[in-house]
Image (cartoon, rainbow, N blue to C red; front, side):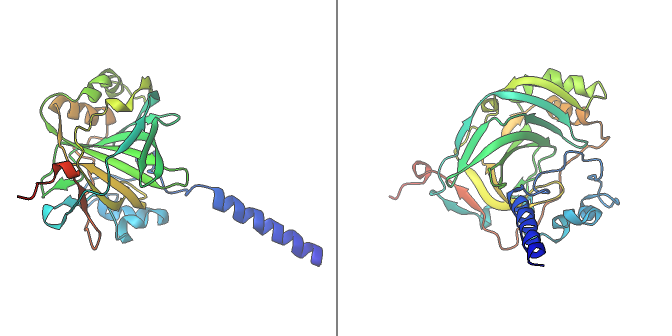
Length: 277
């Protein structure tokens, strides 16, 4: 009996060890987006995401959901958050049609972003149109999400919004690959070495809040950084991202979610603050 008890103890011990060492199974966005859509009022639309799978319940019951409206009236302007410490590097990448968006995935990561002493590895970037976040209620034409993850599974996303204007240089770099996927039925396309430093930010100011993934499973406690500067892309570039997906929809943007009691900050460096008279 004592031997059996000892064996059971070690069995449960190793199971617990495996569980603790394994990354959260539902922490990342789903790779296949065909099980949900963005059609308002449909059985698989945003209002019903949380009912489609039990592990997607945060989409319905979460209290820290994204996207949100970055409303000036509730923003706390701060200077202590610090500039974004990006240590990106070129890496081999694949362009993937996930069903509702185009994702550029770096096979072995493409460097890191450091926030509050934690390093987050850049894994992928994908695009939503129109923008998911709004600025004082204003929606823009496109939003890029650069998705990072730390070694212990924490997620940090850098969001960049675009309005129609001059061409975006990064989208110009992958133009031919987007066109190739748009004109075929292939899901993945190897694009080779891509340098994420070519994704221009152009501003030291940014919004910071704690939110969620904007697609199922809508995992919460995601650290969001939204660049304050709205950049530009051409109408053709925005359209090329939608055409490549083949989902016959004109949008892949989740509706706004309530801020609730969350803190919303705007980082502005000390040298940008107005001087006292």
